[in-house]
Amino acid sequence: MSPKQGVKTFNQEFGKGKSNDELKEMLLVADYLNIKDMLDYLTETLTNRIKNKSVEYIMKFFGIENNFMPEEEAARKEYELLRVLI
Image (tube, rainbow, N blue to C red; front, side):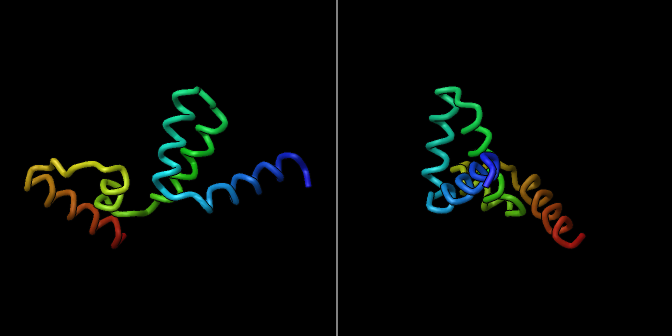
């Protein structure tokens, strides 16, 4: 196994056992310590976990409150429905 393959395998296994909250905390630490490779790995891992998820899921995932106006919320839901149908 090449070193590159070893790192890829390690990264895949490392992320499997971590909760979303653990990964988000590690992301903050990697950013604070400016550890670029870890930051890249964690952003990719978190991106894969939220890919193709609903806006509601992503907002809950990151602890974001819904501050849309009723008209904006209706338009967002319509857009999301159309995105799923296409």
